[in-house]
Image (cartoon, rainbow, N blue to C red; front, side, top):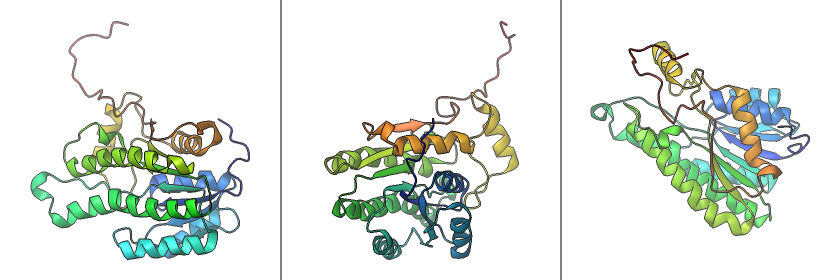
Length: 262
């Protein structure tokens, strides 16, 4: 899908910008002419990325998404610079792997703080600015097929994504009267995160079990996010767009002792 110059000059916030999907989104929207506000934990790396991929005026702003006061400060700085963003992409998330007996209170809180509470606080702050500026903006929450498909050692993560689905729909209802659309995007399996590292064997087995047999790539994720934020999706809100190679519908990792009929 060709979006032409639709995103040229658009003000786009991307959280978790130094992660795998975050970088893809930053590069994609930057190449489309968007002015970026990138956030993560490393200010120096954010400055470098914003200068490399963003249009003039793009910037990085480090923020600890577990700290409510830090989020409020981040939102205030965005308001000072822009008055209001056009698009907020709540991409930041953690995917720690651990059994029930290994998951202590701090690990539990970290997952829910970053994957869910931060989405609420950022959406509240940025949506308030959009409303005050009479900006008919967009919010995209990066979710996962884990919202529907349980995975061993990932119960708290799956919980956070199931809750994010409810939050997406609920806030879409609340913000509709202001012309602000809220949708979720499930981009599928993308290995390489430093925040939630995965072993080579884990990556190999997950990829092999997927119906379309590969991990997600930039050309899968970026156009999907652009569609949700575009005029082409002007009648789409409260929806979840799944672009995961079939990973969330089931697994191909099943032994069958019979020949392929073809």
